[in-house]
Length: 274
Image (cartoon, rainbow, N blue to C red):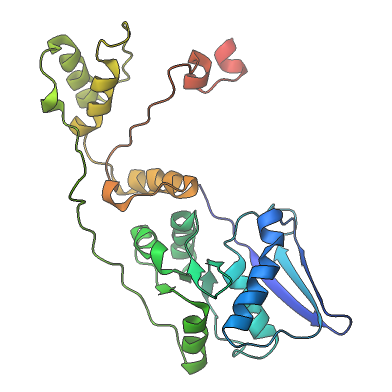
């Protein structure tokens, strides 16, 4: 839920041309060199005929996903002198690259934006993640759809600041409401008391008695989340890849499988067993 700062270092050395990525990269990160190479060629940039070493620091932190692609490509251009050396001063970079040079969205953008806001840095990210990152607060955001557009902006001076698009409520969304429930007066009363007093609630009964129906509508009578609570819930959804800007500030509802054990619901562990 918190973003660790990763520094992408690119070194060009004499020798046989080749690429190596170090710093505990997993499979998707190791494959980034092929995506980066194709994207740079498609955008008209040269690949240095040298021994290329890309270090992802800190070295003891495992790296996963395609979020480092854009940083690697820009680091390559900076190291080879194809972009001004101070072009990305104070700017953090996130984004996955396609073979055509398009910048694809990634997971975990909201925690990264929160960290950038705390550090006073700007964030360069895919356009599809712009709305999500804007929830972090007054962080400077630079969004782009292609690597070529980013490089052109860096060559001409400065990245333009991007404003988050306005959100609109989906037309076909099915909204649950406690008013949909007819009968179940005792259960509804219990839900209202639990919601008003922030109490825990345990419902038992045979299948089909309405437990899931009641539980799914409990968030509709809960107060909206505060800013810190919304950031925490949004960060979890961002890392899980299911962030939805339409549900910002709404208490989340999760429905575990009916075979989930009591230990799994409570979190498990030795303390629970004792």
